[in-house]
Amino acid sequence: MIRDDLRDMPPATPFDDDKLKEECGVFGVIGVTDAANFVALGMHALQHRGQEAGGIVAYDPDTGFNSARHFGYVRDNFTSQRVMETLPGALGIGHVRYSTAGSKGHTAIRDVQPFFGEFAMGGAAIAHNGNITNANALRRELIERGSIFQSSSDSECIIHLMARSLQRNIPERMKDALRRVEGAFSVVAMTRTKLIGVRDARGVRPLVLGKIGDQGYALSSETCALDIIGAEFVREIEPGEMVVISAGKVESFKPFDPKPSRFCIFEQVYFSRPDSILGGRSVYETRRQIGVELAREAPVEADLVCPVPDSGTPAAIGFSHESGIPYGMGIIRNQYMGRTFIEPSEQIRNMGVRLKLNVNRALIRDKRIILVDDSVVRGTTSRKIKDMLLDAGAAEVHFRIASPPTMWPCFYGVDTPDRDKLLAAQMTVDEMRDHLGVDSLKFISLDGLYRAAGVAEGRDAAAPAFCDACFSGEYPVVPSDMIEKGFEMKTAAE
Ligand code: SF4
Image (tube, rainbow, N blue to C red; front, side, top):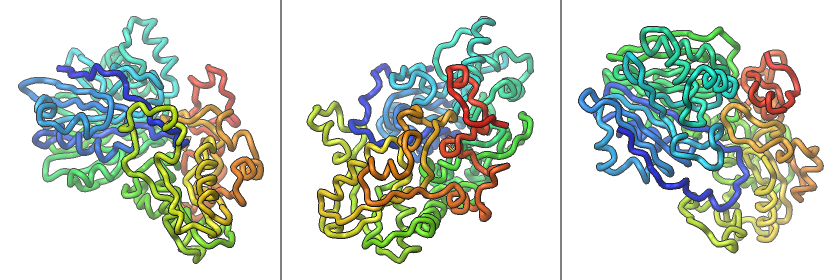
C-alpha cells in the first residue's frame, strides 16, 4: 500500500547558505524484525544528505510491499508508531532526497524515492543516490518503445529497463538494466527476499555494507548511519560491484566493465559527516589534515583561527595546530535553524545569514582573524560573514578555503549553480579577494587536497585517484545529457 504525503513541498530555507547541496542518502536492511524502524534511524543519520523528502518501502509476507513517502524531515514523518506500524517486515529500504535531477525546485511526491515496479516474478523497489548521465536519452528511447513514466527521476529508467529485460530473476534483470546506464550513482534495491546494493563502475558515490547481529545486513551511503543502528561496518561496496544479500549471505557480482576508481573528493571536503569512514580513513581526520596542508601552503600572521561552523571546523582545528595560532569559535551557529522557520517576512529574509550565524564579539574584537570555510560557491555568504566580523571589530580577515576554487558544475548528483554563477569561474583569486573584501584569500591546492585525503604524492594528472571535476573540469563520466543541452567540456573524459 502506498501512503503518500499530499502536502506541497515545504518552503525553502529562508536564507541562501551558498553551499553545494548534498545529493541524497540511501539505506537498506534485511534480516531484522521491524526493518522499517532501522531504516528510519539510518535515514535520520543521513539527513544531512537531503532534507527535502524521504521514503521507505518495506516487505512483509502477509501484507506485501508497503510504502510511505513524505516531504520534510525523517524525524517529523517516520517516528510515530501509527506510521511505522504500516511498514512491517524484515526487509526495507529508504531514501532521503535533495532534488538534483527530477523536478528540481518544485518537487512532486511522485519524484520521491524509493520507486516500486511490479514484474512477472514479483515486485522490486529501488532508490538511488547520484545521477544517471544518459537518463534523458534512455527515457526518450523507453518512451518510444511504449514505457509510461510516472516521475521525472532517473531511478525510474532503471525500473523500465528491468521491465524490458528477458532475464528470469530480478537481480539478473537489474544487471541487464545497469549495463545500459551511464553515470555516477549508488543504488539500494529490494525484492521480496533480497536486498541489493550497486555502485557505479567508477564508484563516484559512496555505499557501505554493515552487519547486524548474526543474520542481518545493512547498506548505507555512509558509515555514520551504521553506527546509529549498532551495525558493524564490514566494508565499502567496491566500484562497479553489485551485492545481493539474502538468508544471511552476501553474493558479489561485477556487472560493469572495469574502470579506474574515481570517488567524489567533495565527499571528503563537505558532503559526508565527519564521523563517517571513507576509504578506510576518518572523514574528520581528512578534514583536519586539509587544514594542516592549508596552513603549510598559505601561512599568514594572525591572532585567531575561526571556522565557519560547522563545515569549516575540522580544517580550522588542523590549521591552528599546524600554524600554532590559537583556535576559537569566533562565529556561533544557531543549531535550530532550518526549514522550521516557516514563511518568514521579507524583513526577516533580509537578515539572511544572521539567522544562522552570529559573531562572538568578545572573542574577535581587535584581532586578526583567519576564517576557514570548506568552499566558496557564489561567494554571497562569504561576503556577509566577512562584514559581520568587521562590524564586530575584527582588525583583519584572512580567508582560507579547504577546497580548491569551485569552477565547474557537478553532474553527478550534486546541486551546483551554472558556471556563470560560480564565483571562481568568473574571477581570478585576486579578483575574488577584492570582491569579497578580505585582506587575503587562499584556497588549498588540488595536490594539497589529495595529500590530505591520503594520496601522499598528490594528484596524478594522468590518472587522478578521485573525481575532482568541479575543481579541475576533468569529468570522469561524460555528462552526455548536459552536452546535448549545450554544456562544453574542458577536456574529453576517458
Ligand atoms: S564533480 Fe565535484 S561534487 Fe561532483 S562528484 Fe566530482 S568531485 Fe564530487
